[in-house]
Image (cartoon, rainbow, N blue to C red; front, side):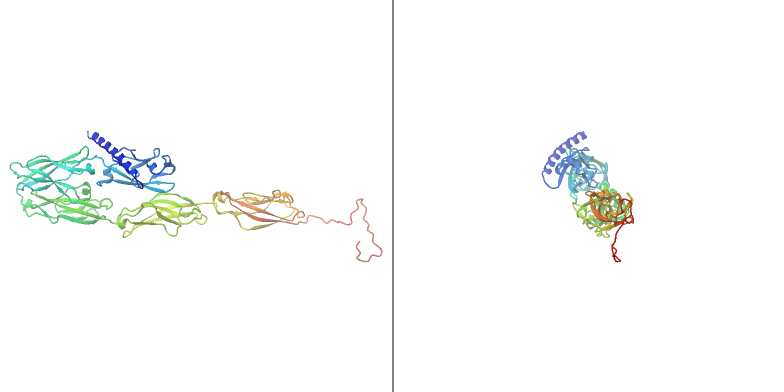
Length: 588
């Protein structure tokens, strides 16, 4: 029956949720959704692709993902529908405890643009909890001489739901001696009190049995009850009285277990057992019982568990002092937890690249990171920076997110990789800091052409050289890497004596070794000039040229030849006539 009513309650909330979500989506700016708690896994939360201006299929293409810490397991993205859905059951009471409104903030990252969008999801309460008391039965001791109008505090019920679904009222079963009234607490709560309406007579009735019922305001209404046993005692003249009606104390969050917080004290002038006061907590929530303990005899309040300012900053509790005759009184104890700088900042790398192309413009994004400090005040104020010696800086983007960007163009030939240190320091005293490291390789850009050692070369080759023999080598160096540094050699096309240069000289494209394809003849040509090209394999390729002058050296490969007088072709001796009067020195 209860489950059926709960399902009906949830169905009404789902309709309300759809209406509220429509109103919220009509606004601009921050993306807001609402979803009722206790829904099944895969429940539709909002059309995130529409609100980001994308088609559903574009979520994966643009690398859209949830990056929020501690919230990723609560929500997921449906790539087919482009919607934000629940990743499991949502329990508002577990997520937000006693907060009247439960908002969860998540961040959506669009990977290809490194833009972050804030999404606020309200978890709407359903009436899934009934009011409950800590004990099944309580006992109250009342003197038979207690006057009508005397008040006796009762334990309050707890309902973790909020609004009308939370605790709304109490009811006491009809009886002749007691009524129920409410007493306002300092926090605005209403605490039940038992009020004596008539005189008691222990001899007639030594005990009275009552039933206190607590109701919430949900639809349907849930309830919880506790049995009350009122024991009528003999005369006890005085009620215990605390030295203070309200005890206030501030304690640092780093107190260890067993440390004394304070001591309460109530006095009772009665003698014997009627003057002995026993202390106890009243209306205590489970978190208080796990954190503090009270010595029932001394009134000393001690630390039982660990304090954590980031979880609970304030505790309010009620302490009862009851004498042996059953008379009691209460006092408030207000404990304020003071933050201690016990949490170092946390750096989370949300998105990063391990390689960036050299010559990328300043402002190129290397990484997206989140910086958080769980402390508060100055202890939680964090500054994040990169050492000045590196060509990087941090720019704040959204909330606690930063972009790591370049401050200038990088040159791989100067520095091929960086180990970037990110440091986050809070403002506490003493300050706490955290550092993390990002390794970044600078990818090569083909920005260096091959370079020869000299601007020109001269080579001397004796004539009659062997055909196909190597006679010189050139080498060019490219400072780039991989294919950008792979050099090939070639000759610039030209002609020599009407024939292509390639018929005289060849070059090994890999090694730069030059070969003579012919046997040179000094008597035909004595020198030649050519150009060698070195080209890398980048895209687009870069190249450079160098001049090569080849000089042919003469060898004694020709015998003397008499040109005149001409030797007769018939084998006879040649005769030259000279005049008889020829003087010495006459040219014959």
